[in-house]
Amino acid sequence: MQLEIRPDPAEVGRARSWARSRLAGLGIGADEPLAETLVLLVSELVTNAVVHTGRPALLRLFLPGVAKEAVAEAAAEAETAARATVRLEVADTSSRAPVPRCAGGDATGGRGLALVDCLADRWGWSPEGSGKSIWCELDRCSQAREGAAVAYGGGLSAYEDLAFEAV
Image 1 (cartoon, helix red, strand yellow):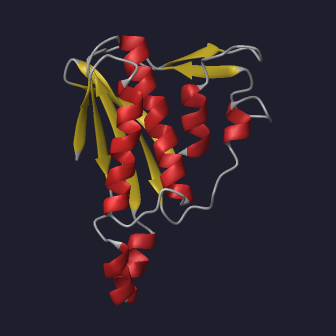
Image 2 (tube, helix red, strand yellow):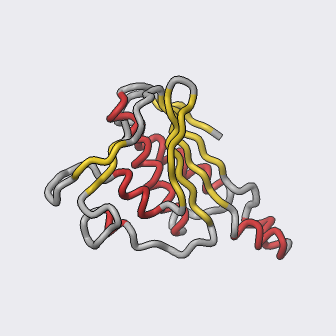
């Protein structure tokens, strides 16, 4: 499923709402760690696309196809759903790759992809058409992460003082 994003900062809130509604449709509650993390990742990647490119973007979600009701009916389906991977992609028409940048302790921005790196099980980017797609994945069976504090300067990270900017 996908959502077209206009180059307007107000689109970030719309993208979060859209993602929440898609998760709810699968029986994933808004207060579940997976949902909270996914909505935060949507916010970061859509913000990067809107702010750094000033061009339209496309938000894609690839969600497990098993709702909670179906999970309750069969143990095999429950195991499959618990291990399912949720994938988020944001494609834009800028061909510039994400690049590291320094974000000092007092900086008000520049930590978006560092946050993605801390919270997602995997992430990356690839060329797509004349632009690129930045993606991340969350495994439903993963333990809750405490990486957000690292991304916002509350601990040590492999990136030390580097943050990432998606352009």
